[in-house]
Length: 114
Image 1: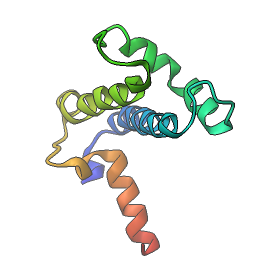
Image 2 (image 1 turned 120 degrees about the vertical axis):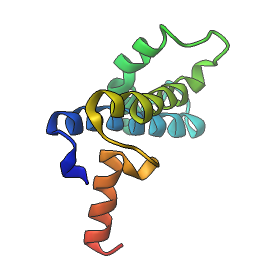
Image 3 (image 1 turned 45 degrees about the vertical axis):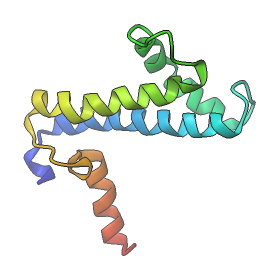
C-alpha cells in the first residue's frame, strides 16, 4: 500500500510527520521542564521547531498560551497531514495508521517482532 504513494509524497509526509512528532515531544518536555531550560533535548527540539512555530504563529489565536504553542503546532500539522496531503498527493487515509510515516514505523515494529 505504501508503494502506491508517489515517492515525493512520502518525502513530504515524512517532513510534516517528523515536525509533528518533534512538536509533540517539545510540548511534553515543556510540561516537565522550564521553557528556557538548557536541557540538550529541549534545546534541540526548540531549534528544530522554531521555523514551524513562527509560521503557525501567523494563524494561531491570541488566546493560546505560550506553553501550548507546540501542541497547537502538532495539531495543525496533524490536520494538514490527515486532510490536505492526501488530497494533494493522492492517497487514501482511513485512520491514523494509514499515513506513510506511521505505516513505516509499524512495519519496522512488526519486522523486529515487537
